[in-house]
Length: 310
Image 1 (tube, rainbow, N blue to C red):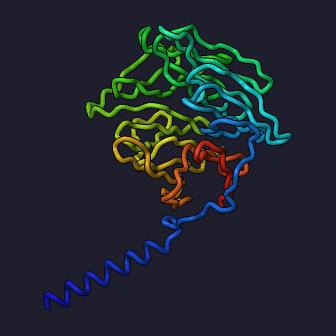
Image 2: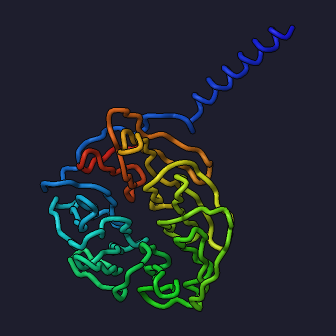
Image 3: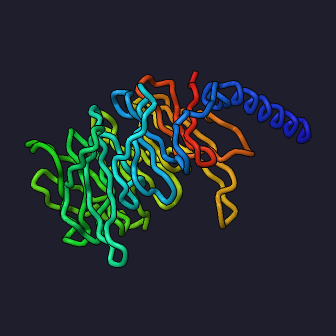
């Protein structure tokens, strides 16, 4: 009798496993027609991000130095900035072709600054030079960033908004989420669990944000709420333009270097995770999704690739 029960349990587990494999949430290989994006320059091309209008594809190079814009209309490339580190964590505005970035100046005692770049090549500096600035995040047309060296005060660039700072959350190096009210005063939410959060990104409507954690997971939150939804392991996460999903990479390393990386998509409404690539011999990284909701860009071996999402 006991053997029969064990056998029945095994059959049930196998059936459930087969059922799970047939569900859309575990379907793989959804990314098709993958090809080189055709950017006509030499050197490394990484971290692609399409603009809200769909006219430009921003990307950076080795060591995240500088930002360039590739025109998807005429195929020309323009250098937006050559500042060191500018290509790490840069972000397009929610609905305008404006790029916010953090760059560094100086060879020995480096100083950081926050700036906003326009496709015509104009760059507006939005901060004083500082030793410790957070990465910028767009919300409600404002570029938000924190200067940790000077009392963790919130700074902003853009038109003033009466409720512009209500419920905004940004990460603090010590690990706790920091909430800023509209008077720009700082309150610490001491969770006590020792997690360190970084690189926040907001959805287009500003009501939802994602945040990365040093535990290797990505978390999803809502404005005005202290709850965070753990969507699993991953990095380099970005919202789709309509805010319906998050696209990200999941990497594997051998303790020294990345040996594998694939692209995943998380549906916010259904809470389902979709694996978009399954290529053990390729390292696909830093994905982003175009305005059409189907074109996916990522980098592979120092080249920008594009694929089609079913």
